[in-house]
Length: 195
Image (cartoon, rainbow, N blue to C red; front, top):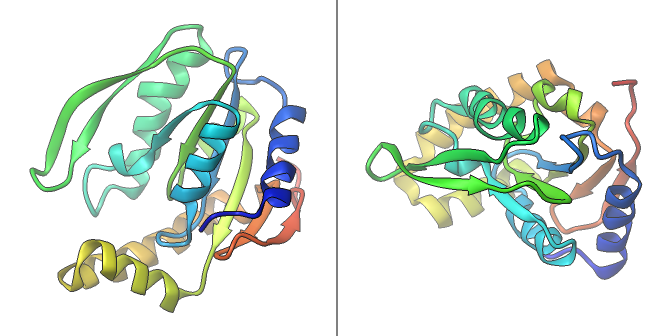
């Protein structure tokens, strides 16, 4: 999903107006269900800002690690950055089923984190700008099967149930600053609850 220029400008304005609550950096979380178009938007943001982009797919310890990925993000990346130190994480190698090489996350102006549960409540102390992206389940599943193969269908079904649970628990939609559909169009602005 490539967002139109006017939508990208709107998101960039939200980022520019946000407090630098992550040790002097701004944190942008592009969250929403799997297959909704988050990765493409995050890459657009990374180029436009410019900013480093971290993908939650690199942090989850496999198909059952949706909640644990957010813990790894906090422990390995956000907490060190908040204290003025570079973050470091190990990329999860999905085919091998283990954590592989290390990656450094230097201090900078802005960090973009993309992926399911990237805006978990553990990010709240860092005043993130939360961009919510969603698409209909059938569209998401079609994208997922195209990427992961039909053999991943059971994993996807389980993942989608876990996503819904975590999004309700963390009130991610309600906390988001910009809400987009899977085609890149704005469906809502501003948190609908105080954070």
